[in-house]
Image (tube, rainbow, N blue to C red; front, side):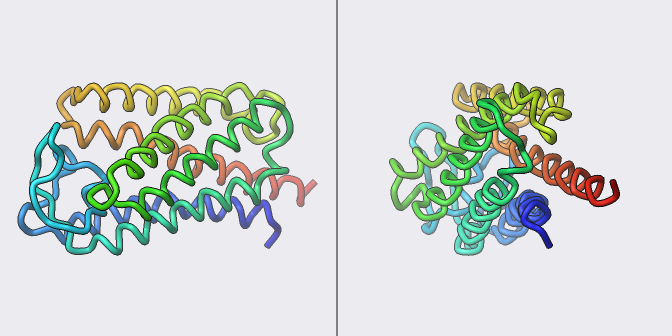
Length: 215
C-alpha cells in the first residue's frame, strides 16, 4: 500500500472509531444514563463520578472512561497520520498547507483531551477543546480556498459547508444555545464536521490514486 492510500485509510478509520467510542462508552453509563443532548463529549472521558461543571451542572459517571480516552488518542494518531501521509497528494499552495497544519492542530487537541480529562486538568482540557473547535473548523474553510489542489480543489462546496457548520456549532455551543438538540448536541455539530470531512478527503485520495494507476 502506498503512502497516499495508507494516509487515506487513516482518515477513513478516524471518524467511525470516534463515533463508535461515543456510542459504546455512552451505553455503559447507568446512573445517570448518557444523553447526547445533555452531556458533552468530554464527559465520556471523565475519570471520577459526581456533579460536574459549575456553568451547566450535570451528573457524570463514565465507567469506560479509559476506553474513551484511548479512542481519542487513536483518533488523534489517525488524523495526524492522515495529514502527514497524504501531504504530497493534497498539493501545494498556501491554502492547502494551512488546511493541513490546522488539521494537525486539531489532532493535537484530541491527544491533549485524552491525556488531560476535564476533571483531571480542566485548563489543559479547555486548551484541547479550543484546538479541536477552532483550527479544526478553520482548516476546512482554508481547504475551500485550495483551488489548485488536485484533491481539495474538487471539494470546495463540501469544505465550505462543513467548515461553516462547524464554526456555527462552536459559536452556538459557546453561547449555550441548543436550538432544540441540547447543548451537548450542539457540541457534536461543532466537532463532527471535521471527521466527516476527513472521510470525504480520504475517499477522494483513494479515487485519485486509482485513476492515476489506470491512466
